[in-house]
Amino acid sequence: MKRLSPLTFAVLLGLGTLAAPAAARPFRVSDIPNGDKNTCLNCHGDLKASYNTDFGSDARNHLEGSGVITQQHVNWTPLCPLDSDNDGWTNGQELGDPDCTWKMGDPNPVVFVTNPGDPESYLPPTCGNGKLEAGEPCEGTELAKTNCAEELAGEGLLACTAQCKYDYSGCSKPPVSSTGGGPPLEEEEEGGCSAAGAGAPERGAASFGIVLGLGFLGAAARRRRGRGRI
Image 1 (tube, rainbow, N blue to C red):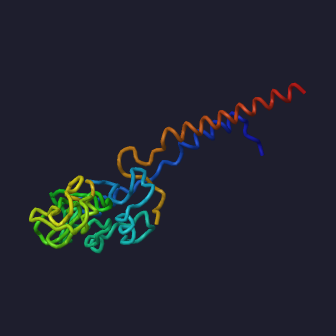
Image 2: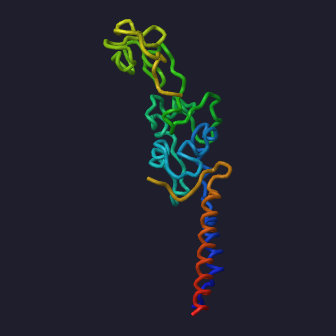
Image 3: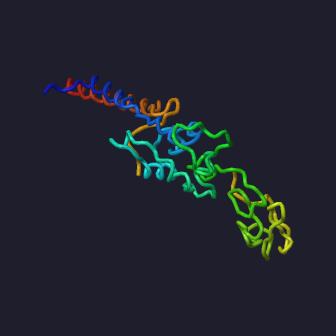
């Protein structure tokens, strides 16, 4: 078997980092309502699709259709009522289908959409509906925090105003900073995102491979010069 020359090996090593662009699964964006709003970030944590969000894991558990997994579609019906990212809103509410009536092929609901795979992405809370929602410090007798100390307001218990803000009247001192509380706004098949540029290797990885290959070439040249001196 013919051995590769150092130059050939170096070139192949550098090009190897550029090979195998990730395969996308763009058809699944159409399996859920308003899927084109967040594109692959509905199911993946980054544009390289290097890992699944909780919504992506739930979607993977509700695939349907024949053939290999890469050809199967997401079954929206059982996925809709779930709250995959545990932000207090169902997947259907976040994607504009609160009653879970949307079917694949239907027009997308024209509503404000959030990301069902991101717990920091949620619908604006509605004060007065009797439900403590994400981003809401309190609602009636339901409070995200109960002790004044949690708001740096000394001792005592917090209450809730009619505007769904903390009431500090039961605290031993005013809060240091009153912001109203609330948070700030199975690995799948090898494949990248359907967004532009997804699945493409980074330049840094390619550059590293080329430099490594050239280093190997230089070391081989030095060994040949060393043998020539003997």
